[in-house]
Length: 88
Image 1 (cartoon, rainbow, N blue to C red):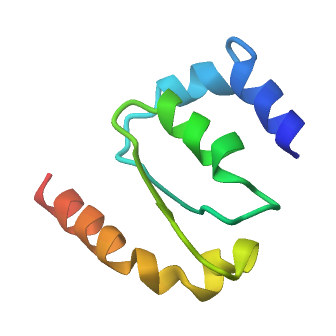
Image 2 (cartoon, rainbow, N blue to C red; image 1 turned 90 degrees about the vertical axis):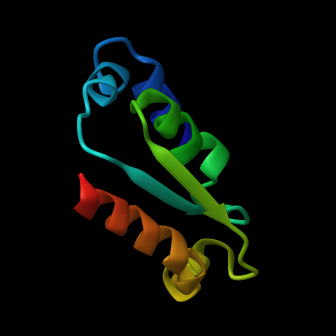
Image 3 (cartoon, rainbow, N blue to C red; image 1 turned 90 degrees about the horizontal axis):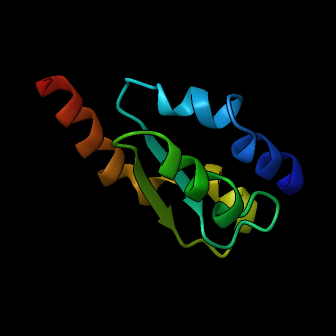
């Protein structure tokens, strides 16, 4: 998965080119301890390719499962993101 993601993000005109054209406000959320989908190989490089993207990475002892079971840790960030979107 990691190698596939790197290939997609680094291939000109494919993912990287398309992500650069995203006009929507984007919030990417991940778990620092996620060994299955590590943020440094997935959402961190993705966020760099989307203009204005916001990135929030939180800590969870649950690793990959934390994105579902500890998502409340991201609650205030999600709420602020949505409130800001309402004002636009």
